[in-house]
Structures are given as structure tokens and as C-alpha cells.
Image 1: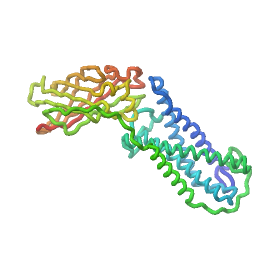
Image 2 (image 1 turned 120 degrees about the vertical axis):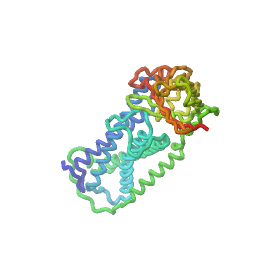
Image 3 (image 1 turned 30 degrees about the vertical axis):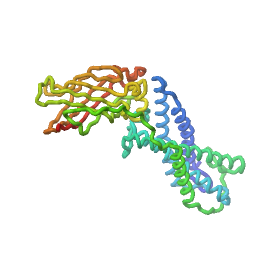
Length: 399
């Protein structure tokens, strides 16, 4: 069979790419539905859900690559002429559906890929090329928008696919013509090229754009773009401090299924008493209170706040009280971290830079989540790492 298309039939390359794409779609969409509905109560169920989503994402990238190749190939080839050029409405509808299929085959995986790249955690793409995308920042808001677009475009793809299959069956069963046969494997009866038909120009493209825009509008009307309400963090009381925190961040990183998941607490207070010229054994004290529900941890934020993990509903705050000291020139905050009802001794080394009445500090400590009863059911470090890296940075000024 010839590799290239002619005015009467599709070549072998077009057929192979067509059926590879079809097979990918037929597996990818059900796989996504099954993954989305899979339970995650318990380590084994969660691990299975992650595997399903990883397979769905990886297959989606593969389908995207095949679709791009198929579109590029189609643009370089003559398209077999319609067998019924006099049926202009039918021809227009078929071309519009083809444009919807081609476009959706790009938009569905791209939107899913952006959602994946904009947030960390949960179900990596199974390849060695990294999980991020250029120019796509880590942003929960962008991830939610991309997730909504992914759902909308997937619905358009499914409807277009149903119409496409319906049209092919109509030609095969009702019209009894060679439209479907031209795309089936093997040699195809050579058809007489129909008379030239009136070109449709950009009309199918415009129609497809209208459908996509309309679908986005419907999705917005159904609330797909509505921001999911997060749990309200605990109200933290104002604190009296010798040093006023001007800016700062409490970041945390944990390994989940072999991938780093990073996030931070956005709401916290720090009462600081520090005397640079004081006794090295007691330079002052620090009292940090953290609103647990203010955590952002990528796609697993809601899971992290649940009863098996931080249990923010029962334990809305965490507290670190410590004495500040200096040992061999290295500053350290030694005290107790109270988290999830557990009191655990913690020594937190940090670097401090003083510039007049402005102090800048950075430090990191590694905690064991098991000491606080976090994720007790997850006893496999390969699924959820035991070590959690906590980094603190702040700039404070003394009046």
C-alpha cells in the first residue's frame, strides 16, 4: 500500500497514525475516569490511584505526540475528496467535527499537562524528562483553571468522537459507500475521484472555535472555574515581639512516590526576643505559632489537612517555643515543637545576618513525620517519605 495519500484514498502512514490515535483515546479516557473515581483510603488504595493517574498522564503525553505527528502529516498530504460533494451541509458538519477532533487532541493533553506542571505532588509522568513545563509557574490557581479546561476539552473530544464514529457508520451502513473503507487497514478499492467540490475555507475552523468557546462558557456557568473553598485557617492572635517580622516563609518538602512535594504555611506569627551581645547559652527566646489550615502542598493539600495527616480540624495550630543560643559561632533554636497534639524536642540551626536593627535568618531542619503521628497508615517510605524538610527564612527589624 502506498505511504502517501491520494485524492481517492488514504495512505498507510495516515492509517497507522489514525488508528494509533484512536487506540490511545479509547484507553486514555476510561483510564482517567477510573483513576478519578478510585478510592484513596489506605496506602494500597492510594498507591493504586497514583499508578492509574501516572499511566493516564503518560499515555496522554504519548497520544499528544502521535496527534501532533498526525496533524503535521495530514497538512503535508492531499485529503481524499468527499464522495458526496453535493451534500454541502453534511460535508461542512464532517469537516467541523474533524477540526474539533484535531484541536481537542491537542487541547486535552496540553491542559492536563499544564495542570500537572503548575502544582506539585501526586502521580508523576512516567518518563525521565522532568515534571515541569517552561513558562508554567507553580500556582494552585493556574492548576485549578487548567483542570477545568481539561474537563471541558475532554467533553468536547468525547462528543466529537461519538459524532465522528456515528458519521463513519452512517456512510458504511446507510450510504454503503467507501468513506470508512478508505481508512481501514489493507488495500482499498480505487475510487473514482469525485468532481471538484466547493471549498469550505475557514468555515469549519470558525465553527470549531465557536464550539470550544461555547463549551468554556457552559463550563463557567456550571461552576467549573469557581475556586474551591479552602478550610479557614485558625485566627492567630497578635503577638508582642522585640523584633517585628517584615517578611518570611515557612516551607516544607516531603517525598511522595519518589517525587518531591513542596509547599508552605502562609499564616504564622513569631514573637522574638534576641540580644546579640547576650550570653551564648541564652541569647533570647522565640515563640512561633502556625495556622495549619494555611498550608499549601500542591495537589495533595486537601489530603494533607485530613484526619490521617495534619488533622487541621482537630489540631488547628502548631507551636514552636525555643531558647536561642550560639554554639561555636552557629546559632540554634532549641525547644519543643507541638504539632498534632505531640510535643517533640527540636534543635533548629540557622544562619543570622545583622545589619543595624535589621536581622535576616535562614535555617532548615529535618523532622520525622512519624514522631507526630502523621500518616501512620503510610509505613512505606517509598510511598510517603518519613523525612520532612522544614525551611524557615525571615527578615525582622527592631524598633
